[in-house]
Image (cartoon, rainbow, N blue to C red; front, side, top):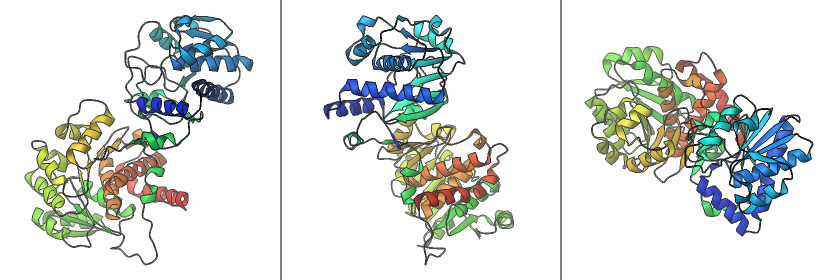
Length: 486
């Protein structure tokens, strides 16, 4: 599937551009209905099927699906929300092409169905689902359901469920996915998502210029830097981690992740009293005693040191705050995570003013995000606002991690399994981002690649995953990526 995600408004524009380019809307609707009917016939044998149609173009698609399935010998029942003679445009034409009976939409319409096609509402729904539509959706229950574009009740832009939505076994959308296909909670109503080509030329994207993407390798794999003949440890990047005094495990996880993702060298700077702990457990990274923030900044002055990470296990303190500010002042790419974010909760603008001096990635979870940014609105919108306000790439961690750049680009990551809900997983993610920055990836690509690789590694392990497992699961993912790019 292509990486671009189109908002509801952008998809309407894509339709309009295709029609203006000579493809009739009626032809697009026929192609959409055929795509759904074909996929239904591939997946299921003929069975009693109810097609639930709404009053707009989504309902028009439903009438096409009903006609084509009936023409292939399927027993089909059609229920419509609203009056048939109130339909307009292409939806009306396709309703007239349906020669069977049309009954009012109701819970009873699905009573004898072994399969339900949900074509009630499209992705642009802006109100709560109620009345007969709600009753019909509730009646679907556990029956296999095929959603046309999105399950009815899903906001295609935000992933919000407006009151209710069926749990589809299959969702067929057209041309490109929408952000709502990947965002919690709607993501878990989609079932398998398939994208159908209905004749909209990809050239319309040149005019639409989408800024939202599914976080998949095609988005950033071209920026990955594979080892080349003549490389040495410094040419592959020297990553520097600020190690905490007490919660040493966080920085150790991050350091190992930075090495596994390909950084040629990793240093952990820590206070003398913690040095023995780091040295005993870290074989590859250098463990360097540090007297504090100024020493950390002085270490970064060496031009061979490529990128820095501050925050994991650091503690919320003035020292952590100063270390973060001095790291940003070193004009090297920086990842700020965990305590390095919370340390600015009382004065976030101090952080933002310093971020503007250097490439930076901020990796908050929801709680840390709320301490720095406005948390109102949907996930993509607030992550974009945060990136624009801070001047950094913001990676908002969660089941549907959002990665936003200050220029408005956003990637939605949807491959993270629930097994990642384990202490230390975020430290590994920060280390992966650090290692990629150290190798020269731009912050947006580094953050997006780190999130996807993190999720892919966790999915390969499955149940029983702990954060310590993650770094050593990265090389198999990298091997697959390298074969893909060969």
